[in-house]
Image 1 (cartoon, helix red, strand yellow):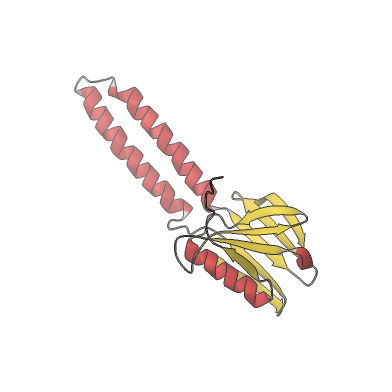
Image 2 (cartoon, rainbow, N blue to C red):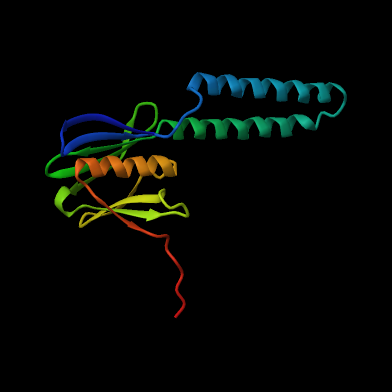
Length: 173
């Protein structure tokens, strides 16, 4: 999801990028505990019928389910903030429920190039990257193609134009 948090002037803005999250944390926990209850009920029924070897496998299934649900919840808290002013573009990546900063990069606005690699569609980008003397960084890798196109449009409105390239092709020599 691409959200413009603040706009101070035509050349300055703050853009928030976050993944789409269909369920809240409490709804994820409700689904997880429902699945655990069903799995535990079935495995206990088989154990009482004499197939007690199902219990370790049901335990492994619940452990794997817990790890996967934790990963999904952690990825759902991911945020990328792009702050643009007259002199520089600041990129911050935060993750976790306390929104601890994972990554911070500053680019000089005049030397910043926004590179867009186009996908198979005619109007939808496959990746958006910031490039400059400070390095190269892919932005919003969790966004859908339509959301990446929206990000490129918003950057264009602020005055940061993107260079679009078709998908990389293999050349034989």
